[in-house]
Image (cartoon, rainbow, N blue to C red; front, side):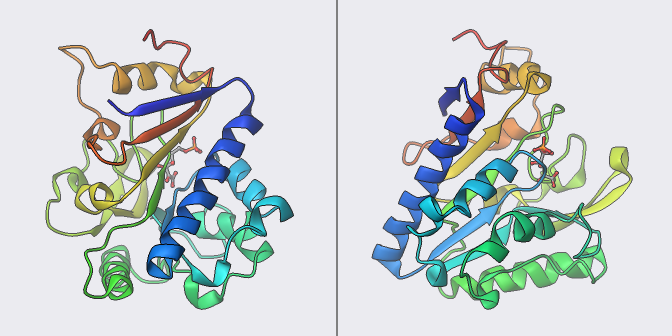
Length: 243
Ligand code: 6PG
């Protein structure tokens, strides 16, 4: 069972995740000299980004040892406010002393398939001879149960070999590039951040599935003995969960 941590105040949620972020950075850098992190997209992470950019948290992190990727990206220009790496730069990365060469945005200037291919190459190169296992992989979830750009009914869900794939999301009429399940599941620590009443039904479905519950992508992120998947939510997002 994933570990669920719910908070009445959104700032307390972001503080808890920021504290974990700092701890994971410290542990990985102490052990390996670097920490590899995949940020999630959408609007939920903004509060976390801004807290990590604050002196209190930024000063605790050796940013020159931090390597940042994104679990998924919209195939829009790098300077679009819909671009996940653009948002993270504005909210966090431009406010901390992380070397530009440590930041790996999806090359959305390329066609989706080529961007996915190049991104996978960059990830494999980054991890060298080791298996590509992010020390921290942040995920959000949509009210339809999608996570990263693993949307219900899309071909990427069936990908078992590639680590990164392009995917056309019909309902959004948008091309995306996303980590696949094989890459997500290799991460050392997977953390979902999900907030809001609008997601409460899906949170209940994913965290307390019934016999006949229709499987949604977020349910495919299987739990593991070591480093259980962590879910950080506000009380609104778990208001339909009766555990
Ligand atoms: C994206 C995401 C996506 C996001 C969820 C939740 O690019 O949109 O990576 O998986 O995490 O859609 O988005 P919100 O945080 O905006 O609700």
